[in-house]
Structures are given as structure tokens and as C-alpha cells.
Length: 418
Image (cartoon, rainbow, N blue to C red):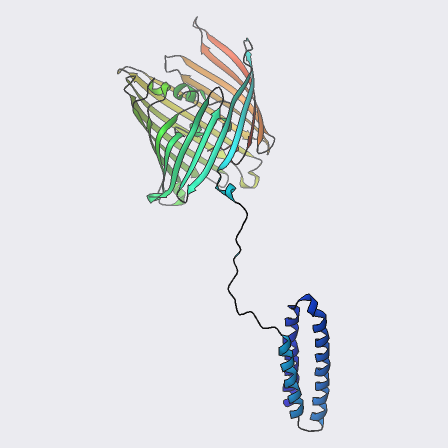
């Protein structure tokens, strides 16, 4: 039994010594290797001695004493572990002021047009150069600012918003594109076409409906996922949209929009929305009511989402603008579709029909387009538009327009389509 104890103890001593050697400094490695070789030779010698004494049935106490001395010598070669086990922390000493800067992006929208009938004038248009600033202000608040440089400089949007308020409500304060239907919220360079539909430009102005005020957004609770997702917006702003409320802007307007979303399958979904707006402008003695509805159907198979999709959308509005208590209700709307043929190529078309606010004039327009995405940052588009308006003699006048559009963007905003 003593023989087995001596052999096992010697081997364990050597095993404890070898890992410690791996941690020694390179300049001591050679000398330690020589010491280990010597210790291994002594262990072999002790093994032979123990085997011989055991065969002769002699006392192995002397060999055990030599093994104890060998263990003590091995321990002396192992360095003491450091007493300070506090974890070290490393701090970045380089300057990091750029981490405090907002996300900055820029978008350019350039167009070339040809008309029939002529004359051909102002064929090339720098539609806009847009600068976007986005940043979190603190753990509770974010901000977005969009400035447009075209024929004149304007703040297209500039607002701060708070998320995670009680009830999951989001609060926006500042200047923002209002949630009237679906496309009014989109920025011009992100539209599925070169321009807003006629019903938006005719009833809300060339830039759409933009308000200065406050907005509340919330997702309504539902009983189960199969009942869809229902969103609600409530917005209050100045009644300073000249198309809807006339000149001035001393009054207020209120808007409510509800959007209902249902996932029909893995590849398809449908959404339905409704909009109500009312505002008064005492400066021009105008009171306006707007009722709208929108629908969208999208097919996008998950396994081919980058290459195939199809969307059909439409919106309709009824606007009643009364001046001094007098005014008629006007109607307008559009229907359009877009088909994705490959990862880079989209084709689409749209039909618009609208009654103008300043009379019963009925205008309609039809067109088609093709969009080629060179990359995520650059796309080109060609669009043909045919417009029909009432003429002076009672007949309708027709006009055609060919538009070439080039849009490029840098920064995180890119072609954000809300």
C-alpha cells in the first residue's frame, strides 16, 4: 500500500508542476524545463527503489522521506498567486464626441420633364435637397428634423416625440406630416410615383397636409392576435393650411385617424383606415370638414420577399369647405398598384379623379411608371402621365407628360417611407 501511495503522490506532484510551468515567463522556461527533467529522473529512480524494497519486503520510510523532500522542492518552483483578485476595468481614453452627434442624412431629387402639347419650358427641375437630423435626446425622448432646400427653404418636419408613456401612448410635439390617409405621411422622394395623388395636392396643397401642433398615437388592445392590430391617432394643429382653411391661420383643427391591420396569411395582409378632420379659421371665416377612407392589400411571400411583391392601394376623400356658411362637398380619390418584378425593378400605375375645391371641375389622370433601384441609395424612375381637364368650349383638353426622376441619398434616413 505504501508503494502505491508513493507512486501516486510523485505523479500528482509532477502533474501539479507542469501546468504552472506554462505560466512562467519565456526567459525562465528553459531553466524550468531542465529542472523538470531532473525531477522526472528522480521520480523514476524512486519508482525503481520502491519496487525493489517492496519485493524484498523492506521498510520504505526512507523512500517516503525522499519523496516529501521532492514535493517541497516542487512547491518552491511554483510562484505564489497574486493576492489582489479585483477585476480590472478598461476605459476608452480616445475622444468620443461624435457619439453625441445626431444621425445626419441628405437626399437629392432631380427631375427632367417633357410635355405634349408644348412649349417645352422648365424641363429640368431640382425638386429638392433634403437634410435630415435624427437623434435620441435622452432615454425618454427622440427628435426628427427635416429641412427641404428647393425653390425656397422650409422646415418640412421638426418634432420631438416621447414613447413608453402610460398606456403605451406616443406623444409628438412640433411640425409633422399629418396622418390623413396613407400616402400623405410619406416624404415626396419615397412615394410610389413622382408626385402625390391629385386628391392630396388638390385638397391639401402641393406639399400635402402638414400641421404645427401635438399628436397622440396608441395601439388599441384586442382580444386575440387573430383580431388584427388597430392603431389610433389624435392630432390637434393650427388651421393654417391655405388650401383647406384659406389665408391667415388663427384657428385650430382636429384630426382623428384609425388604421386596422390584418395578417391574412404568411404572404398577404390587408389594412383599412378612416380619417376625420375638422377646422375653423376665423381670419377667413372658413370652416372645413374632411372625411376619408383608405385601403391597402399587399402580397409578399417571406421566402421571396426581396424579389417579389404586389401592392394595391386606394384612398378617397370628401371635403366640405364652407365660407360664411356656404359651400359644397367635393369628392376625389385614386387607385393604384405596384408589382415588384425583381430585386431592383418595380412597375406600377395609378388612376386619379378629383373635383376641384374652387368649382365643380372634374379632373382625372392616369399614368404608369417603372423604378430601377441601382442600390439602396440610388434609384431612377421613368413615368408617363395623361391628364384630362374641362376646356373652355365644353370639350375636354388632354395633355401628356413624361418624367425622368433620379433620387440619391446618404446617411441612415435614406428613402424612409413611414
